[in-house]
Image 1 (cartoon, rainbow, N blue to C red):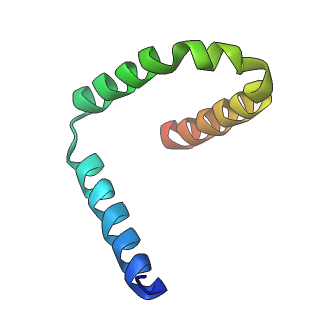
Image 2: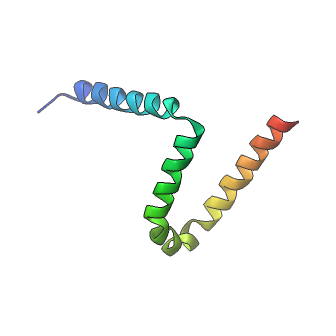
Length: 72
């Protein structure tokens, strides 16, 4: 069994590589991936909409506040 520090290092490497790949995406590539995920999970999103509706509204309000700060 691998020790915890090795697993932690592997996890950090994994997330670091994921972050690097995401930052390398163009806006168009990122939107394309988002739309593909949205399409793949649309049914599940609709089924759970009521469970997460308040969280989504809160996230939208936070996003709007951030955009507002950028525009001002």
